[in-house]
Length: 125
Image (cartoon, rainbow, N blue to C red; front, side, top):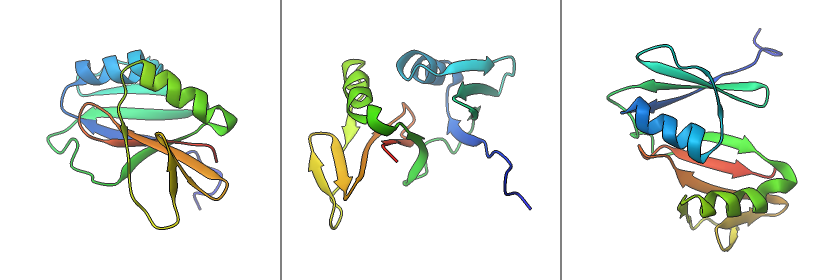
């Protein structure tokens, strides 16, 4: 029924101005629509991300958003670190860590949080 339809990610935030500085300024996403008082829409590749104001911002304790970045993972992690992003480090069975990048077999990933504590990951696959 939904196969072939594009999903849209949503992230709850407390302050849209702070969120815009992070998602547009730090992450480099393109604002597609910021005309609403309660939400902003960003474009990343062929996907969209809706960032909306909510009293429940930052309450999710699991990864909220993943970016598949392929072979650019190490370059992107360095670039984000250079922009002041602090990476999260997790201890998981059969996962190794080299600096900020975790690996499990061929899969490599790094996690960080937005200003509201939403967990975001960049992954090679």
